[in-house]
Structure formats: structure tokens, C-alpha cells
Image 1 (cartoon, helix red, strand yellow):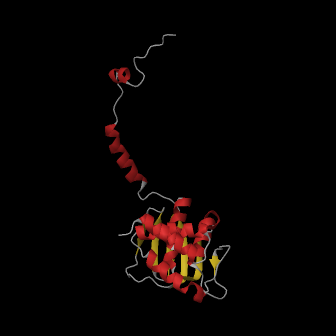
Image 2 (tube, helix red, strand yellow; image 1 turned 45 degrees about the vertical axis):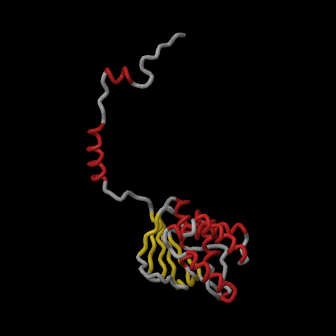
Amino acid sequence: MKSLSEIETTSKRATRAAGFSWGISEEVGKCIRILELFGLPGIKNLNSYFKEKNSKNFENLKLINKQNQPQKNIFCPINIGVNFLDQIRTIETFNNCSFKNIAYPILLLPFLSRSSEVIGKKIIFNFDENQFLLNFNISIFSNFDNEQYPFLAKDVKINFLDNKDNFSEIEWKNLYKLSEETFVEETDSLKKSAAGAGLTDND
């Protein structure tokens, strides 16, 4: 079994050999590592992407807006991913954004996962009928149950979730009240044995 370090390094070098800059190649290496770490087919999809990269002539997008649609061809997932990560602070203010026609959407996924960590918010990634919940680059939950991820995502929607507790205020108060039973009442003996107790000032 290949180590995550091997996966990251080889993916980075292959991306550079495919014509990307070293900077972008490093980002791709990190992202493929994330996909494989979470048990998602990063290497498989990156290989397929490289085989079609030149013939498909995937389209790039410099500035990401609330709604994004390619002019002629299909969006490149790596270009979208890198720019999404770079522009995440601005994109976050949209609350949500959408794309039409992104190739190999699984390759975009880890860039969104890392973006979730940067802004400290969960992100929901929907394409067609598939949904992924990205949790601060710590975990990825999905309703996708097919091993074959699609080549093309026709309709992509990305939503940013506001941070909020997953419990009610009453539930919190009940738990906190129970925790108070562990509090120790301060006594004279505790005061004498507490940090700094017994020290004398010789000045």
C-alpha cells in the first residue's frame, strides 16, 4: 500500500509534468492526498483527467462570482479549485455560489474541504443529485454510493453554513448543571495547599 507521502509527491510531480506550475502542482499533491486519506478515488480521477486534459481543452476561470458558466468548453476542476481556495474570503460573502459544467468534480472536492478549514465554516457541495458535507478539512460526509464518480458535473451548487451549536440552550444548561457536581468547594485546607501557598516574602 502506498503511503500518503508517496501519493502526494507523485501527484505533485505528475501535475508538473502535465504542464502546471510547481505552485499549482503542490496544491494538487496536497488535494490528492486528502482524497485518498478519506477513501475517495483521487489517483484514479487525476489519471483520467490528465488523459483528457489536452483533447478536451478545459476552460479556466480567473475570478469566481456568485454564478459561473463557461463560455465554450467545460471548466477545469484544478483551475477552479486553486482559485476558489485563493479567493475563499471573498466567495464566502456570497453565502452560496453555483457553476455550470465542471469536469471531474471529485478533483474540486479537496479544495473545498481545505477552504472550509480556512474560513472555519462547513461547506455543502452539491452536483447534480450528489451531496457532500465538508467539515473543516477533518471529515467528508456524502450520500454518494456509486464507486464510479461522474466525468461531468452539469449543475454545481456550493453553500456556506453558519456556525451554530447542535444542541438547544436547555440541553446545554442541563449538562452544565450536572457538571457542577464535580466542582470542589474551597476550604481552608485547600487554600493552604493551593499553588503559591506557604511562600514567604523574605524582602
